[in-house]
Length: 403
Image 1: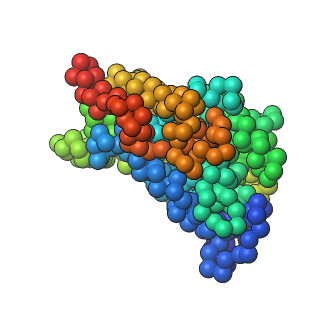
Image 2 (image 1 turned 45 degrees about the vertical axis):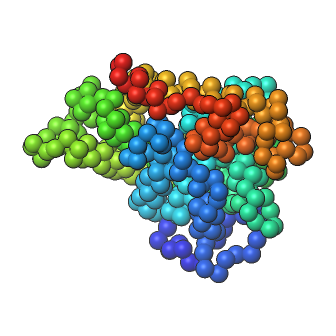
Image 3 (image 1 turned 30 degrees about the horizontal axis):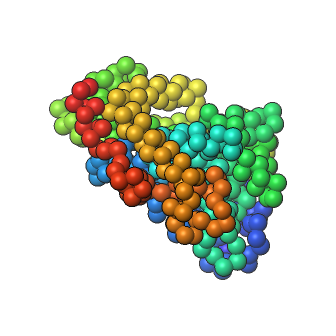
């Protein structure tokens, strides 16, 4: 199938020349290999569950805050924009973006930290590795294989979301975690070239993740009242954008100023990535996917100035949002809730659903079960097993009032 390949750059992935799937399948007469990957991800059970998993705020705190699903959709949109601008295969970039957070447990990074603690000595827990487990093992939908049987190119983009995992170019990824055992286990079965960078399409998905969550976390934090537009003046990049908005639209209402800021943040980052990446590709004479993978640094990247701006936004959000007392109160109770569920299922496996009891459940299979829960299902399970659950809504209200 022609996927607009005549319009793609020489360094773009060619769906017709994919390294293939773990289980061989006949080509589709109507879709490219990467389009099939994208469609399988969208139809996966794990993808639907993202609608009820936290980004920063627990989903039942308000309809306007991002969930893990809305974040994923925003990442996919930005990844497609970057891929098209660089003449890459945007179906592959979108597929990787749509899959990148499938492994997140309930309550976001709080849930990940809780599961990592209870799995100490059992290989820990990492959401990137969990996403790979889901698409290669845990989804049970197809007659001929477990998982989704995605292409090499999509799987490598998921496994190497933060760059190479082995060898001289390894980045220490995933953040705060050693390389997860399942990634190595799957790599032995289906080599993912862990010592090299992934494709340019995968690199666009990784940067799209950074762009999306910086922009939407600013938006969510402003709308939640955790900080104000005036507070953002300490970040020079944001102060410049706010001054531009004030000059072009004097007297603009605050909700519109917030939206104008968000769209400008996204636009400036996208434009910077397109210019910087095109220059890198020319500088290194990149004319093939193999050359993209073999470089000592990513070919899709921010400029030094924009990388500094991106770090400054992260630093602001860390101090004013991620460590905000109301958020931390919810985080502590959410972690305790998941740890209690894990210990209960370890001690009383009969409390697990029937399909998870046989054979005798391992710690890993219990972690798989909990990681698949939505926020509200985890709360409901805690109520079923213990008669009550922490009131996460009250945590937010109490901390916001006292703060």
